[in-house]
Length: 436
Image (cartoon, rainbow, N blue to C red; front, side):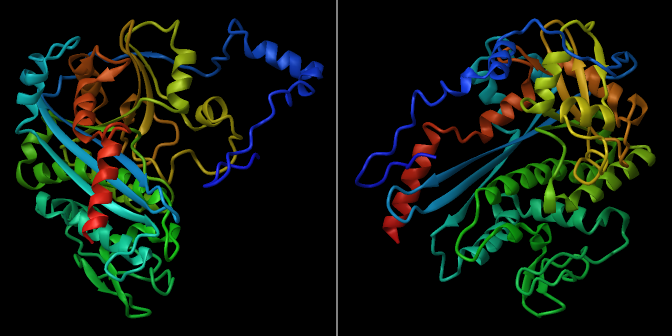
């Protein structure tokens, strides 16, 4: 690895000729030749495309959530870092969607639609070398997570939803919080009594927050936190923001839920220690379906391994088709890993992957819940699958490749683009530092 640029001297330049010896190998030459050859057939083993069902109804109320983050570093030494996170939830109905030009939407039309149908949340994390009210970064981040979940601008609804899921309050069992690792003594028997927000570790007696159950503190050191903290918080908050809408209707207007579609930008999953909410989400969605009120939730993956794989297998597929890959197919054909081991997504996903070729131009990687985990799902396992498929044609946007209009609009509200937003955030952070 070359030396990087410092404060006084330039960085070391990589050699422009170092690759010549490597290219003398006949095997390397053959690999380079095949790398440029796009005519080789793609292995489509085990792809079972089916015709999209035509018995679904178009859902009339659409909710979409998206998030954005920017990590801003100072120019001096040591480099300080702040992580800015913003999430947004929008609501659209089919009459409003019908008024938007899918090719050239008028900005005033979008403004009028979103004016009273959007909510958003923003927060900032001290990541590296930032002093906060005498607290080390480790405890400052824990406090920021709790305070941000209790955001007064959203009337504390996100924290209510977190507790609703974590304590599984929908069934009235009044159970304690699941065990988690204490942020102070590292005991894995830390818990809180039912509906408690702030309490004490039963082992060491020190203060813990209900949000410590997420165990984000496990990736932090005392005086620094990785960018993963902001990324994890954004993903969790997107999920909670979406389920805040679900919780509201479930508790107040349950009869509206059969007409709703809840869309998340990205996969329906929470990874690593953050997956503690996955099983409660599955149980709730299964319970709602079994009680006669199925809830339609949809995730869209726009990039990544599954989106790349869809491009390989969908070219010659008839329009109006879908394919649900099972565990073996995902392991072998998408992840290129051995089939042996834990079932794909068993601990982390609350939605299964669905490849869809809707028409000549649009193909999607969707995530749709099944309730309980299913290793090899089919159409009957998808909660609201037929209704979701029936709704897709009405929410397509023609402005971007394979775009859904609600996701596009949610992104426009949540976006913190690299420029100019990142520059604005850096200026804000610098102004705040000078005031202190």
